[in-house]
Length: 381
Image (cartoon, rainbow, N blue to C red; front, side, top):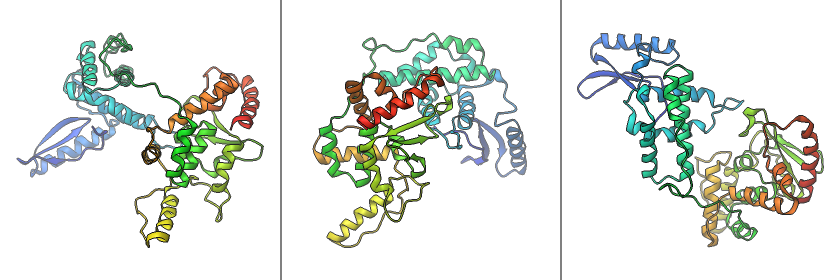
């Protein structure tokens, strides 16, 4: 399922003109008739003037597909970082809406009931999704109708009728349970390092010592680092709690600093606006090693200047296969850091270093937390 775009006039095999507005198919007559093209342009202009909503649709006739299309237009505008780049939230909604669209796309949104929601959930279970995933996706469907009620596209009673559905409970449904994510051991970390590129190995070590998230590690730039004190700080303007007004500053202790120095101090100096860890650089280093052994090789043209989280995960799991150990994911490095900190210094250390924040924390405690964060980073990072 794709998010809504500006409609274009299309032609059927039998020569009729149509376009899709918010998921609804509109017909304009014969494609070779100039009047059909004129009617389409007039409807398109009214649709654009109406903010991407069908000017001719009665709300009572709004289908589930119409509601989804309008919500995704809203989501694309709303779920953006401060710099305007989109978050992954829209894609998460798209995945949640797929079984809804398969079963109830043409159903009036006002007629979507609790029983309909249960049927969508059963479809998710048929697809063998994990219990936690099902609960999250069902909550996104309820959020769709909550937004619809706020925008007066569906009645409040339609939304309220969906909120009574309880989450699936562990052991009380046919949903698949996921294994609890375990922290990766230091032995497993050491096993993969010889099989990873210099850049991937550095990211793994950095996450082990700092406890930062995968997305934070791959996005690190020189300009984001404050290196004036014994403990460095990595300031993130864009992170998962930024929209709540939280500031995320990752403390970089002595071990993590040693991992970063070769990438910061190299000559020529890196562009401070680009990520420190570059797949292009990694490929150049691999090719240089191959040339020494086998002769020249070309660099792939599709490489980017930064790793993505999926690329990091694949690289780590590929190294696990080569090392002959069970696969683990980069996120387990964060779990390992949290476990190590809790065991050696208590819950406070884990909370401060990993950046877990309570929305009600006051600025009075922030200064105390900063001093403690420095202390813990010097000892453990």
